Amino acid sequence: MVPPALPPRALTAPAAGRANRQIVSDDGATYVHGLEQLVAASQELATAHELGAIMAIARRTARDITGADGAGFVLREADHCYHADEDAITPLWKGQRFAIDGCIAGWVMQHHEPAVIDDVHADDRVAAELYRPTFVHSLAVVPIRRLDPIGAIEVYWAAEHHASESEVRLLQALADSTAIAMANVELWAGLDSRLAERAAQLEATNAELEAFSYAVSHDLRAPLRAIAGFSQMLLEDHAAALGAGRKHLDRIRAATRRMTGLIDDLLRFAQMASSELDRRGFDLAHLARDIVDELRTAEPARPVEVVIPAALSAHGDVRLVRVALENLLRNAWKFTSKREAARIEVGTRDGAFFVRDNGAGFDAARADQLFTPFHRLHSASDFEGTGVGLATAQRIVHRHGGRIWAHSAPDRGATFYFTLG
Image (cartoon, rainbow, N blue to C red):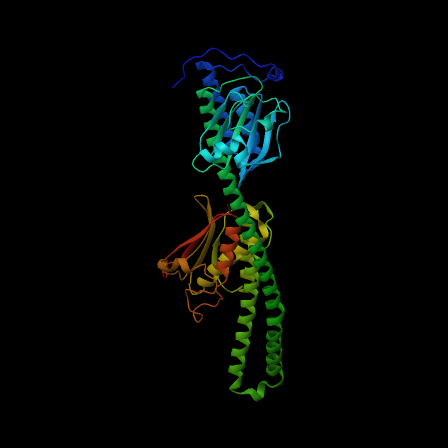
């Protein structure tokens, strides 16, 4: 409701020098203009992430909507009032603290209600000695957060002035918006603190991971190299004397190779978490053809039909995407090994890349286990592997902000889809 019109208030001399100050009256047009300024200030407060910005918005708006000659921002500090900020024609009390029982802002916070004072020298709620050396003659103060005040907004006039009901309503609405903004700042500060703590934890985890990778690389490889070396010497120098023990030696050598492969996969999996992305455009089809050429070179006698389009435009870290694509293609190559007419296809569908094969497939009900490190859906006697390749591919895809999933059925092949963000 627009308040009843009152005679306009004359502009005081000290305020005349402010180009943006208006003659404030209680007519409807002025009240509506004050509401517009309040709405604009509320929008600014909603995006303020630190207390200094909030105080600047509040004190500036408080002067603009009342035409006052000064505005102060007071914070409650236990039993004291801290004048944290001000905007006035001459300096007042910025940076000073007063006992909460000895200042009008303290009265407002203790009583949870606004105060309107026409003459600071004739009101027993005011410590007149604080105002005697200043220009202040009249003032209005509203609490910030009325139920449990944490501060106050003050406005001052150099000439005698009675703050109208509409001015007080606007000031209180500003203080309410300020309270919300201050609560948001506390929330942001808490989030920033938790994010910083989480970042520190991740950094420590990465350091531990690097140390673990180093230990795996050096401490575990050394005994494996010794086992592989001595078993090779046994095979070369004492093959005739081994007899039936030759089978046991072959098993030792095979287990050593599997362990070495597992360590290689484990290190590669760990490195995917810390390596930085170097995003750029590249042809994924070209990568796929290179990988398939390597697979054919390793098994030149094996006939596999591979379908790859002329080009597949992609954007990402080509080095990491190659590792992911290689894992998917090697899986397809491996799980089609028992097919007489093996077929592998690389392509795109609905914005995702895919690698499709007509191999052994898997039970779709266990698809959620596919990307768990060291978890295998087929026995080692059927298909070799460490169970790390798909987990590595998933980590790379997730590093790109993408997703990876699969469709399959037992003995009906599998299709792996992935995006790169």
